[in-house]
Image (cartoon, rainbow, N blue to C red; front, top):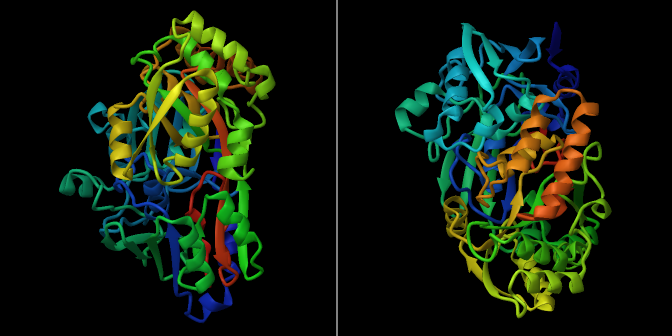
Length: 503
């Protein structure tokens, strides 16, 4: 029987090495600038990165990722795995939700069932779809049995979409979009939409002495240059900055600390394949051949990204180089020939939905717009407000969209929910028997040596059918005052390590 034991050594050292400022009782307030507002705070429902970054601090999962993207214990102190379809989660005792109620196996069972319920429409449902049974063994023990082995099961549980919520809170509020009730290190005190959100220290947090900060304030500042100006002026302690030119300016300022790390998120350009002409594979192949990833990275990201295929290039164990993937090297002549073969010798017109924020990818859409002109295709940019962008994304009301997809070093977790015909966030409405079969096969194999050929083939098939053009993985960048200490980047955008930050 395998047993995964909590990796608490590093955390214990963190707590023992109490910062002097914290020991003196002056941990204070950290103000962070971000460029867009949240779209709700219910972890089982949210999809936007802006929402996930607040969920990072207000909720916990059974397991989480550390700064090396390794799985470590969170609400589960240890996990017994007697066979490859059985997981027994031994829960921490004495953990309290922000409403004062203790977290028990009832809440874990409720959370897993809520995610699985189609009525919830949770993006995390595909992570748990192979669950056969959930059994409350005791107040602090939950047994989960799968229908079949699922290599990415624990990785899926590390997603914010699989956070543990309060059963009582959901019964009280219906959903938690405006009333977050988690077990996390911080809890919401005030939310002024499109302005700021104030989180305060959870006095009952299960990690002794954590968090160090008394308060975290998020300020919404849409302009990247204004975010940098705020940090330079001292009005902000930290800012999440994504614009390459702004980052370059920050790097030139000796008074600032610029933290940067290759990320696992992936910028994509995808189509609603039920709409003409994108229901035609030849058209999609032509579009892919017209797109130059390196040019997009240079212009839109100032070089601060890595061109990627269907699996984030940072997932070196799985990702194939672009040279091995069909339709991934620009070829204008071939693209034009494919368009003519598809019945569009003079090209066509369509619309790209985008938003004037980093996640909405306007600068990327502008480069793509220019690149497509080379094959006679006219792309009109529909630049919409962020809330409308999310609504269009959810309702699939678009010809094409530029997105930033939450990536993973685990291919099943990243690709299954996005591209399987039953995937919870398959916004492209793409259905393909060959792709489904490869995804289904890859997730039940548990040995890397067995899985690798499956995902190699999947990357080639996806690149050939081209329902999505996987563009690049951007670097994760935070600009901060040198007074900020203790913060670590995870690589997936998470702000979890504000738990251990101090000034």
